[in-house]
Length: 132
Image (cartoon, rainbow, N blue to C red):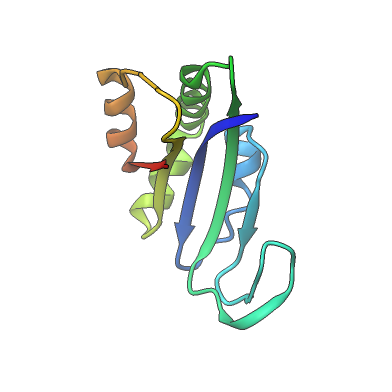
């Protein structure tokens, strides 16, 4: 049973973000290019086009697995690709670590100052969503 996930999400107005899989060492969960026709996750066409390019990798954590391990994996992946992330953010892109937690499970974790400094130094936002 999945108990939450950590996503690493990127947007950019013009750049192709598929290179992120190799520099981060993480699999792509979903991506598209700016100007592409919009599609559902199953590939059905929708009206309109995507304004920005997008890339996301998602790490699910299961009951008994450490949320902290997944978070550290994301931080370590970002550190490996620091120069690429900085270029992306400085050229108009956005980077985000997105934590999704179920509200029916008690989670406790301290995000240490080193991790916060790493995220802030690269211009990476930290978002949290708790589902009931």
